[in-house]
Amino acid sequence: MSATLPLGEQLVANGCITARQLDLALQRQRATSADPTTSAHLVGRTLVEMGYLTQPALHECLYRQFAAERDHYLDNPAVAPVIRFERVVKILDGRRVLDAVDLAIPANRVTAIIGMSGGGKSVLLKHMVGLMKPDQGTVRVGEERLDAMSGRALRQVRGRFSLLFQGGALFDSLNVYDNVAFPLREKSQLTEEQIRGRVLRCLAEVNLIGMERKFPDELSGGMMKRAALARALVTEPEILLLDEPTAGLDPIIENAIHYLICDTFMRTRYTMVVISHAVPEIFQWCHHVIALHRGKVLYSGPSREVDASPDPVLRQFIRGELDGPIQVI
Amino acid sequence: MIDRLNPSRKTTRMVDLLQHMGARTLGLLQEMGRMFLFLLEVLAAIPVPPYRWTLFLRQVHFIGIRSLFVIALTALFAGMVLGLQGYYTLSRFGSEAMLGPAVALSIIRELGPVLSGLMVTGRAGSALTAELGIMRIREQIDALEVMGIAPLKYLIVPRLTAGLLVLPLLTALFDVIGIWGGYLVAVRLLGLSGGTYFGGIESAVEMHDIITGLIKSFSFGVIIIWICTYQGYYTRRGAEGVSHATTSAVVMSSVLILVWDYFITSIML
Image (cartoon, rainbow over all chains, first blue to last red; front, side, top):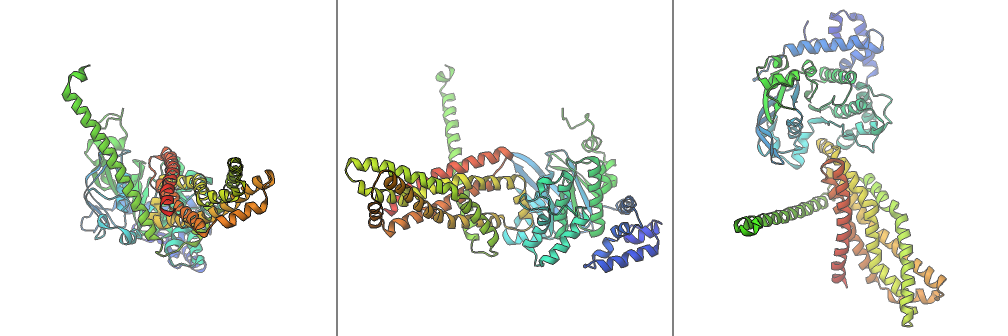
């Protein structure tokens, strides 16, 4: 089965639905959606709404499509990376949080960053959007040097990014709808009606329809993460950074967030960088893995090969063993 | 005992002490430099579009309208106390007729701007610091930056401009209610003639006095919003950091208001 087949055609090829059912779903999509580009992306949801497919079957199909793609992924140096760190050093309170880090984030792939707590993962992410500047080395986004930018130029580059913060960073004084609409109202020329269409579409994608009037303090942890994800998606960024999207969530919600990330990737093909402690589960949901330990990159390569790494630190971390080079207690 | 007999160790301690003092002084100078740069950046951002009128009006409501009650109450009792104390003092010299000008000049030139400033610091300034501090520790300010929105322009400019507008207005209100409080005590309670009280005020208070008071309140507005937003904006270390920033903001603003009051008074007298 080809990983590049669109979702609908893959569902037909799998025998989950008939070609006629796919046609009917696509027709309904075109009839109801104001934005024609969403038709192909949301066909899975329409099939569920029309009763041709169950939600678990859709998830299963999405996951299989992603897994096939992931298993074919090769760390190809010929592909220009979208973000590049060159000998980046960051010292905070006298500690080298990033120690001559060299890494490349592949474009249009899901990259997971793993490592011990305090290992420099969030600092790395903040360097990617220019919230922190390196003490030494360079950070490039495309061909532009982010570490040398400030003011308007930096804000322009940041327009390519969205960041899902660990705690969500939703504005307490705004309800879910206004939080999601916020970046569009501030940074786009869209009319309020167009904004409404986009916001409701994003809330539907993260399954938060009906929660628009709730304030952040009325949401559960999972809902908060999904609302923050909707806010990150609403600007249709080129690069989506996710800082521990599943931290502090129960296994079911964690799984749902992973499906949501996979679903988002399959629909949008954004470059995604996910910081995660959900090891080894996260390896199923990403193409590329970067492992950080004490500010250094231990591993950078395809997720399917991370298990085979001979590095004892990485092996101990992945297996969660107490015995090994990392002394915790 | 050993220390006293060991001069090299004593010298080392002296050097350590000097190094510590030097480091503290440098840290203080660095902090002052950052504060001035923060103010300059905010002032430079004021004329730059977009102008967020809704945010500005929300801050006018928060800093101004919601401070009305506390300002009115403080003004009333400050005026009443001045009336009582003034009457008691002036009656010793047979100058009760001067009570109106004494109350009015004290309030318009001094107590109005200073007490309004201190009240706004306590009521609104502390809340501004806490709000910004919480936004900082919950990464909401970082979120603004990532969205490509300048946080100083979005968060600080509306607060500063609202403070600059509201402080002189609150001070004017304080002046009126304070003078009326003095009237209640002097005329209604102690039996001074209303004509004497207000006639004295009319002949003694000049436009220069009113302008002096308003300029003072304007400058206190800058101090309050500058210090309180700076402390909140650069909050670190979680909930404890927010509490520390709020305390620092209130103490620093209050002290700076009194210190600056002395200097501006000596310039404008």
